[in-house]
Length: 144
Image 1 (cartoon, rainbow, N blue to C red):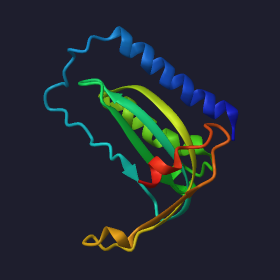
Image 2 (image 1 turned 90 degrees about the vertical axis):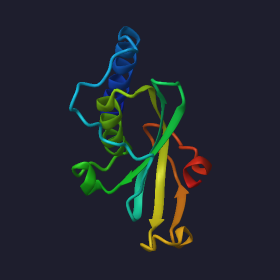
Image 3 (image 1 turned 30 degrees about the vertical axis):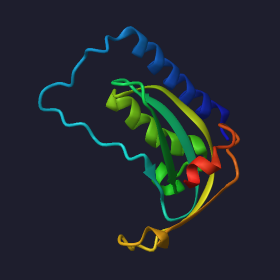
Image 4 (image 1 turned 180 degrees about the vertical axis):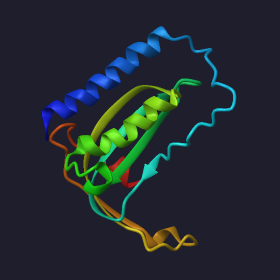
């Protein structure tokens, strides 16, 4: 993967962590601003790269896990795991609800969604591989 892009994302997360330490935890949202909900799992049907990201809620310190897979087209044509990570990391940083954001690894997911909302067993995900930039994700955590 492009090491410069990976380092850029890691630097962004580092800056976010240092600014979190400087801010007071009593800050509230501006009146009238609705926060966008960040889904914990975002899978694109087909075989695509994925990243596993951890973060802690500022409100109570609870550890949250985010899994995102995306096609290169969804990432602006970028073929690397860092392009997928950028999609989620930017939203997490903008939400200002999380601290200690870390990309735990990545790989590939072969995801099939048969669009049957009444039967989750119709969906299937095969998790494999690794990311050159972020290492191997916890495939068991991702599959669950």
